[in-house]
Length: 146
Image (cartoon, rainbow, N blue to C red; front, side, top):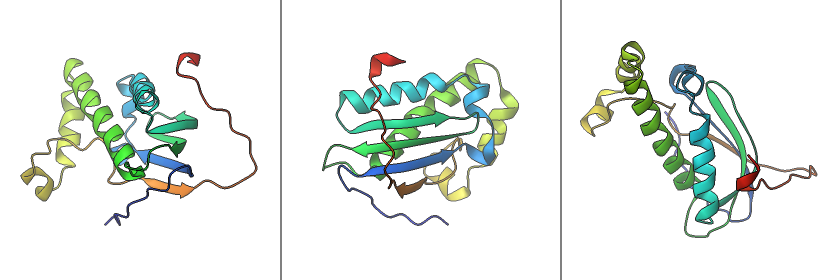
């Protein structure tokens, strides 16, 4: 069971990782790398966080994020991103007729989650986070630089 702790330190750099359900290559299968870029644009436009660096793998994601608002916790920022990306991944799987994959993701939902209306599990619960320390100079990405 994951421990839910709020992380809200503004101007702290966080190393963040989240993983697709059962390590399935959902980013690759649905060509959903663009969804992460759209989430980054949202973070930038709403001044929620700066993306200092990132890598998107077929089945997981790593980033160094720096929160820029005091009223949004790291948990809320990442949870909202995961939710947005998950809905779009499911939509793409449906459009592609990936019935078996949708069934796998549906079977991964626990009974108590189903009672709340969850139909598919796209990502593993919670996410990994660690305060990013070090002397490495990181360059801020500009939204138009992609």
